[in-house]
Amino acid sequence: MPFLLNSENVSRYLLKSNLCAEQELEFLQVEAGAFGKNFNLLVTLSSNCKLLVKQERHWRNGKTANEFFKEWQFHKLLRHIPELSQLSSKVSELLHFDESNSIIVYKYLLNYLDLDKFYRKEQTFPAIIATSIGRTLAVLHGATINQQKCSNFISQVQEEKSPDHFYNPAQRLERIGPEIFGSIPDDCLKFLVLYQRYESLGAAVAKLTASLHPCCVIHNDLKLDNILLYDGWEQSALQGNQLQGNLIRLIDWERCTWGDPAFDLGTILASYLRIWLDSLVAAPSIEIEESLRLAMTPLKVLRPSIVALMKAYLENFPEILKHYSDFLQRVVQFAGLALIETTRAFIDYHKYFGNRSICMLQVAKSLLCRPEQSMITIFGISESELARLNSSPA
Image (cartoon, rainbow, N blue to C red; front, side, top):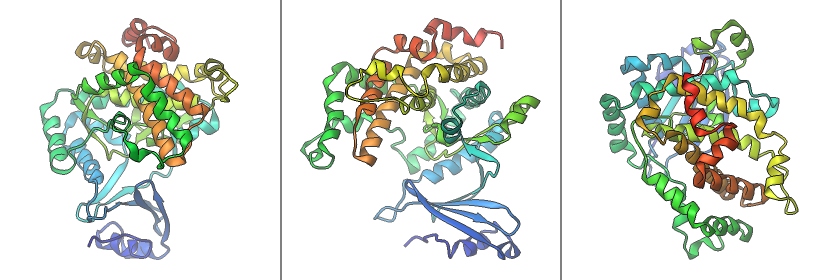
């Protein structure tokens, strides 16, 4: 029977694990929460230091998905690969991993904000933030591309702990049987009907997922809510300190894998597009094109940040276009795949499929089936112009 962490025993656990001194427990404060699939505790010690203590959920057979093990291995990789050392200041500060109990402990980042919440609340999208994201991703992908020692390290983790490392959201849509009826409301069946109506959509998804190019270490779950923004980012930007690594932090490396760099870029692109799509004015009486045009957060407002992200990535890793000539198209297609997964997850959680979700599915279809044309819509420039960003003056 595994040890189960709770608010009462966490102090003893931290003490036993040499993560704090006994005197630091005098005014201990513990905030508990179960977010998603894991159990989290935010612990404030007397020294005013804060620790984030997480335990992975155990299944009925007593096992876990071993995602914390993968995160721990990623941090070990950062220490063992000199080319990745500069990423240490761009990721979460991991202090401790207990494999037998699936417990991981981080130093809580006090002065950082959830980037997705920041964007949606402030409705401002500074290009300098997106530039930092693009540059960080370029370092990760560029330093590990075709590096056998990195591949061996990551592959060993996958084989031992988590062989099914790439999740294809389309698989569930292709394996629909009678059991689906009754498990979701009738309105949600519209999503399945629409998805299966377009043969070109299913064919594009199948072709994309069958042509993966696993060639480097990727985050594999890079959404805006897995990025933290330093709350003094404006002052840092004015002082030119964004290169010092304190502007953003990429967190939750639990799905880190040896994978396709286009997947990471597509996932973060989809996360930006969701801000636009979540702000749509959607109703049955409004055409999809009109709904997209009337969005409370117009695409043209997000576009400078999206372009800045891609520009920074290509400037810092221009070789990617030599490795894969279709890279940019596949980035756009993976963004479409990520939007499909977003729609499916929303249905699973909320049991609802409305006009806004229909619009999102239509945008996903365009990205997957017509990536070249979609680039002009998303970036405001053509594929050839986008490819030339890496040689443009800063």
